[in-house]
Length: 68
Image (cartoon, rainbow, N blue to C red; front, side, top):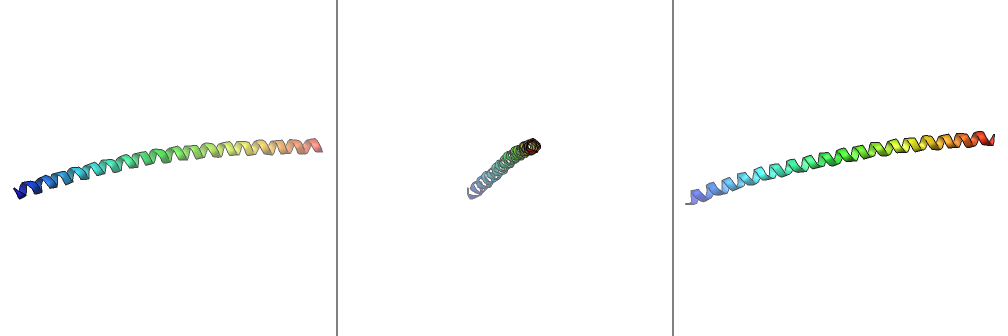
């Protein structure tokens, strides 16, 4: 009887381990997706900042020319 219980516990532990492996894979996948979204958002923000900076430089140049 004790051997049957040990086998059942071993099987349950194996199933638990597989479940934990699957959960870890889900977390890795979601983490990768979040990182990809953050990377894309950062790239878009940098592009917007570069565009705004160029526009501000152009406005400053025009104002400088108007003053002269």
